[in-house]
Image (cartoon, rainbow, N blue to C red; front, top):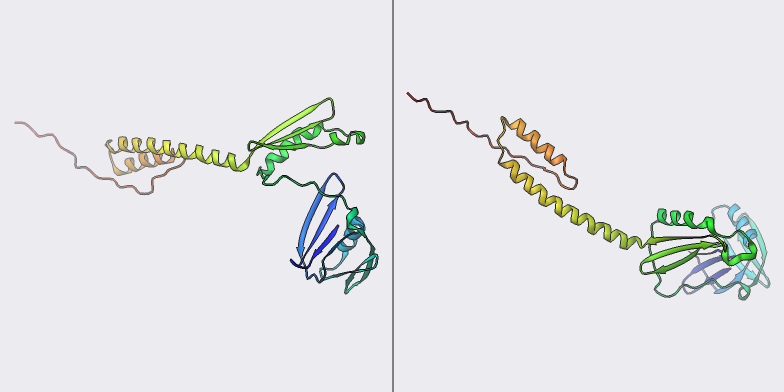
Length: 225
């Protein structure tokens, strides 16, 4: 279905075979609003072969006229009222999951989906969002497979919180190690710097950027006569 909107100067293209629906919107100079349907494969096949130039779409009686410098093309049209309506999601339904997680979830469940066209409702994967979790389920009437994906944002926040605790704990241990190291005596400054570098390298979230070593005068024993 092709829908033109003069108020927003946009053209919306919608494809739907009652299984998969795709909708995209692009900017255009629209003089009159309206919507219609055209043969999808024929229209897409021709447009994909055209040069990357501006084109004009006009409706004349029962035809859509596509004009471009390379030529003029005519398509038979039908009323948009006959186009199937895309399913509407419930308001405020939003869930973010990682692409890799979604692919893994589909790989886990899609094998259980039916391949029989007579069981149309069982040929897909059901998606259910509840309590910040996306559940994928598929069945062929005998076998069922289910996968659950956590909300990406929720999991991200939990991961950040976990790392924050690890950073805080490591900082406490680092300060304790530094206090202990500061009380040690070394034969020379080079030995002290090596010890400090080894300690800094052992930390995952912290590092020592500046080193100050204090050379201590050795105390020689007093000779007794």
